[in-house]
Amino acid sequence: MKIIHQFFFYLVIALILHGCSSTSTQDEPTALPSNPSSSEPSEPTLNKAHFKQHIITKERDSGKTIVFSTIDGFKKEKVNDRRPWGESYISVAVDKETGDTAYQINTIVKYKSHKFHLYRDVRYDSNNETKFIEATILERKVDCLAARKTGAARRTGCYLSERVVFNLGKESITKLSDSYSESPEAQLRYTMLARSGPTYLASLYLAEIAALVEVADVYKTSQNL
Image: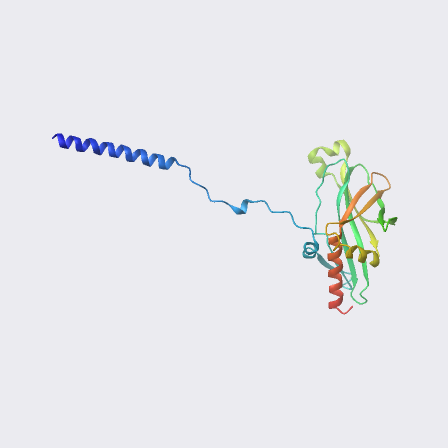
């Protein structure tokens, strides 16, 4: 009888120890698998290869002209409402019959105001010489909805934008394109002068210019132009 009592006593002790062991195992934290897809995407490298991949093509003049553009190459974000902000890109129109090319620097200037600034002139330095070019305003827009969402319309007016273009000759474009290899991150910097309002300091990557020139030349060669 004494032996039976000892047997049950040790059995109860064994069950208690097993239960404690199971509980401590369940309480241990389980390592979660890493999720590489949650990492943030890296910033694109703004070199010639990048801009070549983002060049868009369209036709105009009833198909007589083909236009290449870097409008989707790089988008700048607004810094604040105190100064104009915007983005720049370059386009080239190629005549399908003659092979003549026309390069345009496009600048979209945005700002908060009650009236348009009218950016009609451009100033930039070339070969240690300051040059002035007359610009053309192709489009003007008014956006009061975005301003109302932040209450800006009541204080300083709506968001306005102007799409301004100016031409650069083939010789100037070629020099800028050739200088890309010397300084991959260099930019063409120019100043948009307003008839009424602050100036806007704009820039365009030389890699962007080099990419467009190369694409246009390849097209012309393929068409025997």
